[in-house]
Image 1: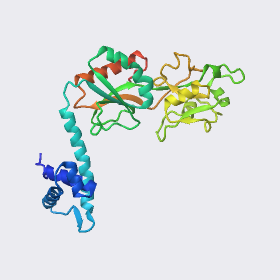
Image 2: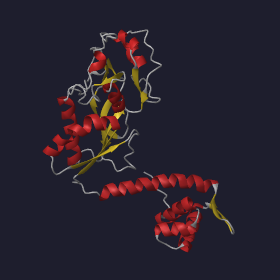
Image 3: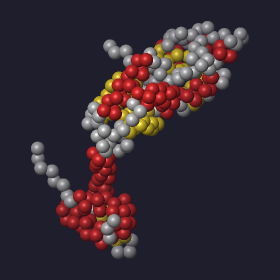
Image 4: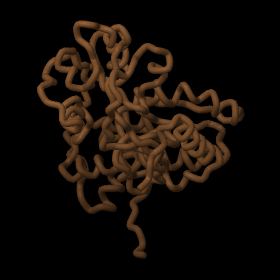
Length: 310
């Protein structure tokens, strides 16, 4: 392995701060040194590189050169990752706090209702739930473990298949009992309002079009009907009698058991994506994370939505 060529860290910190503020005095305030010290560190870095990073204007302060701009962008990312890595290294190995990230619908309808059983089993662990539609960047975010919705391609992460997902139609009991518009088979949906989830550009996601096509049903107008940004909003709309929604075995929550929704016909379609538990390999075997991961697997099995392998 070749020896790394690394400039002085103090000079890098000073330059990175100055590149964001474009002002040596403000950069000095951030890193607790004088503006003169920032200027000296920047000059030292420029000398080390043999190339200018700033253009100095006597009356207008400083501006980044093209090289300085590119270098600052890369350096900011590197320092952010270094900050996170340091915070993780300083965190006690036996930390009792578990921060888990999940999509809003999964957190509200599946994860949070079950957390009581984890707390009862492990009273010394504290779970913090962060909801986000974005993939977790473990190098930058204070997240220990995440539940992701996808196809399992997460390089560099410990990845465990948690749950498969199946889609089926749901509606209110009142709508099901409408004698003028019976719901006995999927083709009957042509006489009802369809509730849609606005999922954006997610390839192969199971929409009404895909669900009906998988069952060979034609003649249903899927272009109309209200659209909501989250699954739980679609379920609430269906429960209030606004139409028929697509639910999943993972995100249905207790709507069926409580009678707020009913399943008018038994047909269901397997989705193209699954749920995975992911975390960095370096921390995967920490006692708290190992316990939480094992508990997630148990809950998926107990709720009848565990993944079917093979």
